[in-house]
Image (tube, rainbow, N blue to C red; front, side, top):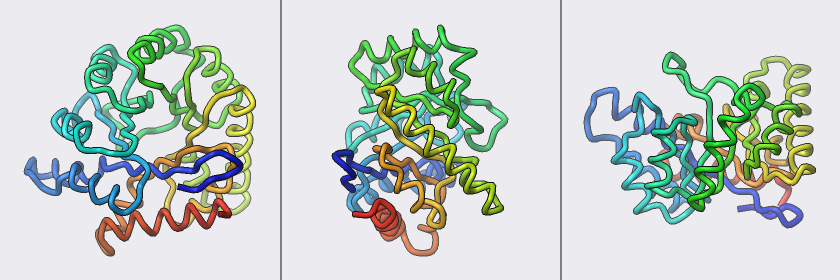
Length: 249
């Protein structure tokens, strides 16, 4: 972890895509729980999983085992449904991150529309926080959405970095980076705690790591992809090193 002006910058490794490979054959390997253990040995500060409604990768048993084994922060990404809220309250992860979810999508596309779903999300957040679990909402770098997130009393916002990560041209990438940085600053000024993630990889993470308001970066696909060639432990260590370099420690 990296300390920036009193804020600790952490890496949380998402092991969903380890489970994706396993589910391709509905077998027993590779085991996402083993990946989580290796990631912790490599120095990650947290483990993230997304329990989807269709259970396309992470399964309920994975979540139960991870809760028993993970020694760092366990972050459960989930849709804001009654079923998922019940699972979270029963499992008690260290953090719940509410994300939008569509069955036809390959990966999460964009942030929650907090403005349109304000009252409903407020109720879900209150229910989960009432069981002692802090809540984060995955949100686009948009000041109005962030302001509404503050109004419904979320603990964290996780700023969506996908548009920055997917930008092909330098001008567009610079514009999207400024949107992310300004959103993080705005959220922090409102008193919200700030995380960030989506699409971050070994080429683009350094710049995001330099945003001082961010507490945790959530990264999965690029680490799992790199691990095919260099091994999981090395892939995690290399990402940690890049984050530390970008943060200026």
